[in-house]
Image (cartoon, rainbow, N blue to C red; front, side, top):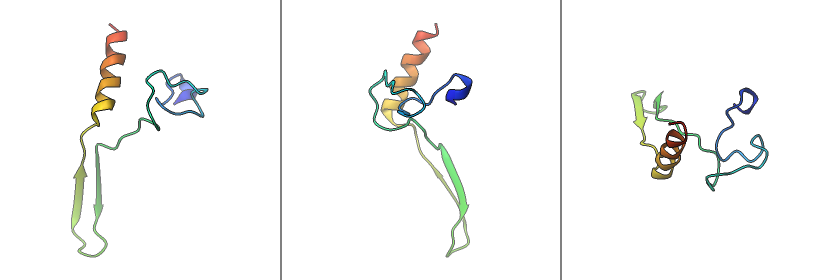
Length: 66
């Protein structure tokens, strides 16, 4: 992402050490994941909301673009 001008927030390697939001770790999130359970062979789908601090960073970025 950094190569095209959009580094991942919290990525200390490809963002040249910049961390303007003081987050720990890269802000990467999987909204959902699907797989076949290895034992039951049932289709599994797990969904997760964004952590609150992700929402706060997104809100801050959206405000800057207004």
